[in-house]
Length: 100
Image (tube, rainbow, N blue to C red; front, side):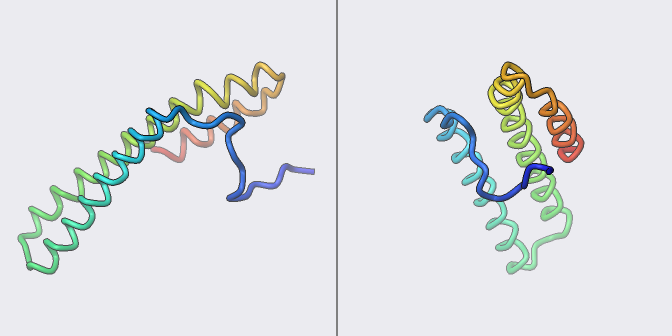
């Protein structure tokens, strides 16, 4: 039977408090940028200016994803391989494809 994938899966070990704080700060910045884009729409700002901000948010989100992926590879994937679970490599490859 295939392992059920759900929203309730958790890491084996908690994230380092500093890593968690850095990720949360990045998310808050992106949410602020999205709010800024919303305000630009309300203010009927020039399309080009809005698109520049959209590109900035996309870039920030991509960087955020790569940081989470790096942590995943360095912790979860390594731990699973050490336990003999090499199927985790397939999952990691699928996650990498989704970040493109």
